[in-house]
Image (cartoon, rainbow, N blue to C red):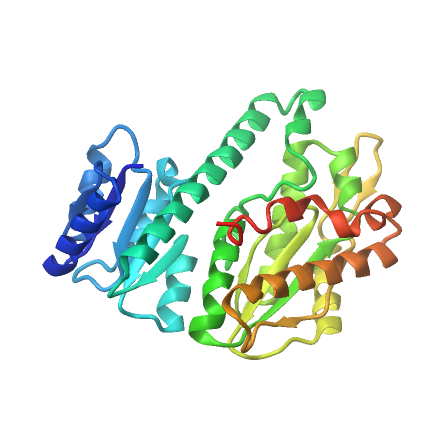
Length: 335
């Protein structure tokens, strides 16, 4: 794995260089500024596999650099780990919003650095798999019989949706937030008739619906601090930040108003609109670090059950305890 590390502090650069060599990351490149990093990225034919970015740097911060790296499609799948002495929520939230995959607080422990890099490597492989899947679908989307490579449970990266991050980064954030920052609340939104969209529309239309629902969630929450992701199976976990709860019934009503504007005509000429359900919120306060993922499981299970009881989808109701998205959840827990 070829790593580009950026830190303006010479002492930390030396530590990183030594640590990476001891972990056999011999293809690592270390530089001292965001400007130098951008030049190195521009000069390369093949993209770097992973980035380690200091947050506090003169000129351009690591968060700004992270956003610029993500602007380049070549770096879409590369994990970005932020290295920072700043462990406050504001900087970490900004880093994840800019496209970061993980963060590590300085002074870092070599054992933890090794663990985060191993996780980053797995993260990259998952992203590559999803990217190949998306590319394949785009190539063959005109042939419906071959579009089944994208299953109903495939997590999508939401396009240009404010507050959205990729699913693996969402899990990663949950793993860290409870130990470092305290409370937050997870609530999940479910497209109750997601199977109707998947079975009766093209993949591109299906993705349009998923993205449109993500836009609706983001718009309803525009005055809140939040992270949003798509976990597959029509489920959108939302992490509400700032310590304030949410009125689930009001949230669901507001979302339903937006959903009325989203419609797709099926191959049979039928107009399909998403039926949205919101589960009860699950707190992450004062619980062990990895138990935050249990709050995510509980939030998703809750909205799955609510949807199954109200949306008249027997095939989904029969499989609540074994929904395909669980195959992805736990990727970080197992690492």
